[in-house]
Amino acid sequence: MSDEDLRELENVACPGPGACGGQYTANTMATVMEFIGLAPINSASVPAVDQRKDEVALRCGELILDVLKRDLKPRDIATREAFENALVSVATTGGSTNAVLHLMAMAREAGVPFTLDDINAISARTPLYVDLMPGGRYTAVEIDRAGGIGVIAQRMIESGHAKGNTLTVTGITLAEAASVAVETPGQDVIRPLGKPIKPFGGLMIMYGNLAPEGSVIKVASNDVPVHRGPARVFNSEEEAMAAVTGGQIKPGDVVVIRYEGPRGGPGMREMLGVTAAIVGEGLGQSVALITDGRFSGATRGMMVGHVAPEAARGGPLAVLEDGDEISIDLEQRRIDTTVPAEVMQQRLAAWQPPAPRYTTGVFARYAALVSSASEGAVLRTPPFE
Image (cartoon, rainbow, N blue to C red; front, side, top):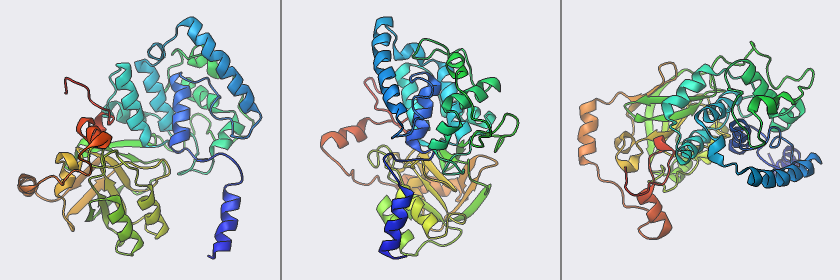
């Protein structure tokens, strides 16, 4: 492909203002905000240049004044059932793995218990009904044309997967707010009840001897139930990227990127470049990736992130070696190495953490205070847990 061909493709692929058309992190969290009740139904799905954006902005300004008069607080809205509704929206739309971090962090601030096991259970019982990129065929614009996020809420409430009695910022319940949404006849973005794309949701939490505290994978578009292969271990995103683009990764490999977690990064960078490069090299169906970092919402395939405890905390990823066999089993929801436990223990006993990337300043303080991804990667406050 020439530079001119690429430029022509870019101009067609991005025809106007706005970005992230699929159910990536931004659109996932916009959907979450409506389901949890903190944003009005159908306020987020209006496309960037649609004239209705002016009306949405006006309504939001009026709503701010109304909320102040009513003395409504976010904690009045963000209840346990509201968080469950939020996760239902992620599961049924095949949303971003980043929602796991965001919802756990939000729940902690709201004083609502919400764990990885809760997320796993909700996603497992919530069918995938919405056919959105990156795993599906449609973009967020098509959600708006289909009737908006309110139609998705109607489906989930009618099927019993979401609670309709939760309060929203407008002062009415989620069911009442969603009832005004009008589904476009013949739309194919949101499947009819009883005809889901998959019988389970788009997120899966996995445990195992490589992730004792858990890890997360997006399964909305993944049809490969098991991957076994040798580890190819890298201590940074840059090292892994160089290996992938340099043709050093072969079919069957498991790319391991460590020291990119909340503390090790510090900051838990997303591995979008590496995951995209793997797909670009034609290895999307034959190579797996595991990391204590996180992913972009655009990531698809056998990509396991948020592995906890992270390598910088002495998690098992810290002592993996090139060639160690790794098994990723979606049916059993496990991520393991076949290296004997006693060998892993011997390696951990001899392991020394790498020198921190920052020794002063904000990043050093962040690395010292941040919790595990299994807790939402939130900053701890004294007294430390």
